[in-house]
Length: 354
Image: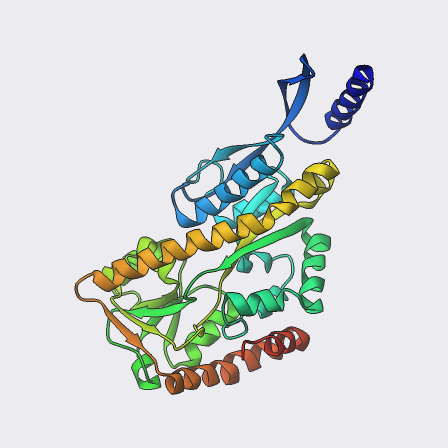
């Protein structure tokens, strides 16, 4: 019996040594006898620090993977730009396998498959519950399969849509009507749909990277921007630089940003089946932890904004929100439907909350 156990252990260790994965030897006690087992050490890197909302998402995943595999997978972290300075670099790290797991947002998938542009078009997804329904569609499954084929990465899970969605902040005045938008210079990302959105409301889009915005607001280069509260408060200090914000009725916003985890496909497939299964079984826990943590941080950001002297929160009524929704449908989604597969938009409409 004991000899059989040793043969099983020896076979496992030999099999592991042929994986393209860094391995570390550790001593374990089996039946009173010390044997050598292997730990798979992986690099985990984020452009933000661990205590940042988005950096902590990676730590949540790493903690789950280590727990689920009983320490057979161990993460070595590189925080705050020590390995990657940008999000695209992080994603490319997973594509190349340098860092086999990566935290990302949905916009970072578009260089590999432009059809993801359709998914994060403003007004297509209305928050987390809508997203969970959309994930069950055949359209979504084809998108994720295409990502494996085109980028060589596996989409593990989505942690959340950023609570509250994209909001319009500015330093000039409250925004309710189209007239309120006119004349404003609004920062936007380079995404086609984001530029269309600002134009649809009659404002002037100014494309800037996120780190440039706080200074641009102070210098008058832009009057405001569209961003989530979770990012706007810590990154742009909107409570001081752009103290006016408009919040729509219900689950509506100017965009839903999904964030999640991907893995290098070759690395993922090279893991022993029992480890893959163990990690997959931990996805629901990691997802729930990510969602709860992100909501807490979003609530804290909202409270900080609300309690900062000089800020003004404008809440749209249901009818006012519908007018904004109609503008997005007619001027943004219609334009994007002409360029990308209609089945994506149709699947999103079919799964919208009632």
